[in-house]
Image (cartoon, rainbow, N blue to C red; front, side, top):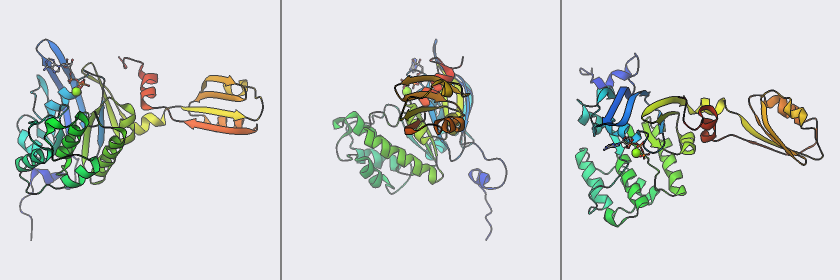
Length: 315
Ligand SMILES: Nc1ncnc2c1ncn2[C@@H]1O[C@H](COP(=O)(O)OP(=O)(O)OP(=O)(O)O)[C@@H](O)[C@H]1O
Ligand SMILES: [Mg+2]
């Protein structure tokens, strides 16, 4: 039998360029006089976990709400699955799971009732992975949302966004309010979504968290997208913190002379410094003495950004 109809959604499986899952062009939203976002252009590819990072008021929520047409852009455009965010809103929403930044559905409803409602809205008859996810997040689906703590309400929100295993997850600060164990569980679930071929767009304040789960990160500040980087590139080009401890005194100048070594400090038989790219020379110099201990740590993404961009970004 031949397939007579190839829906537009199936085109990507035939050869040719793959449509980005999210594509914004000069997306701009002003709230009267005040700035929301200004000329945000970015692309998120299928199968990516994309982190959208920025401080309070940077424009993360505004961008996210525009993608789902919960806000109309003042100018510019957004496409999701190649569909126009304003014209094809319902088709986009049907293929997306969304956790809003302020998840607070009708608070009289229990988590189970909220999820039932979303299942019906999405036209699905079973609750998919809701039970499994609720167990993993230890979400209480039996009490009204009004009676739940903020973190526990957030867990219901996550189950609501993810239970139908959508192609695209758009999550506004998904880990806010979660305790560290639940944050870990969440990161696992995100990695599983990527393994299934899903795409994830998540906003965060936490560079460390983004570093651990995202493939790329977009940095938004004062409503403008200031940079998009591969997380792997960022960590690659970065330096290491090196601490060496020797059995006796060592001439620190020997290490200070190595290209790429900076911020050297010495205390007793221990020296510590930053080393950029020239680790081989560092290790060979260390090996000429009797080493007692060696520590090599990666800087956090936060530190990398401060190093490369300073407090206020590259502007
Ligand atoms: N309804 C509104 N009316 C007026 N200004 C608004 C409105 N919503 C947002 N803004 C402004 O738009 C800018 C971006 O806000 P947005 O909520 O998108 O930031 P955010 O990055 O999500 O911040 P947070 O990390 O605090 O959630 C801010 O300057 C904010 O004051
Ligand atoms: Mg926000």
